[in-house]
View 1 (cartoon, helix red, strand yellow):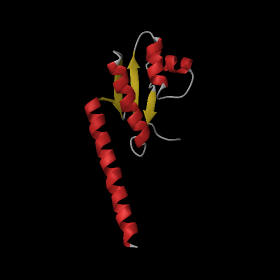
View 2: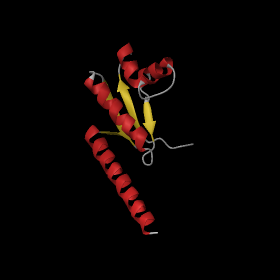
View 3: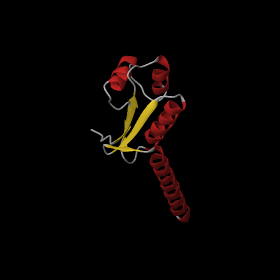
View 4: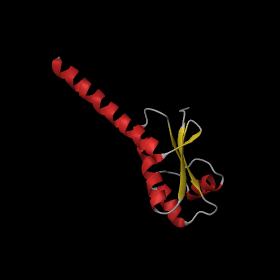
Length: 112
């Protein structure tokens, strides 16, 4: 089973339709499961610490959408509460690494 050690939690005592709509843009599954995860304080989105760039980006976008809509959300990595600035810096670093790796492979393949 894949390890999920990055996640997003939503802090809410009730689950309005607008909140569900935002999360549903980034997550599959039933509305009831999403609502249950929110009310029980579980992660609504997760991904692995590395190698899951697209889902990591989804977590950042969902967090930003939630905050911009006035909801409270928390980011976690390895069980510790984290900040959006850490996540965005980490995302930039991952994107730079991906770009550099692609350029290196492109250069190597051109040399053949």
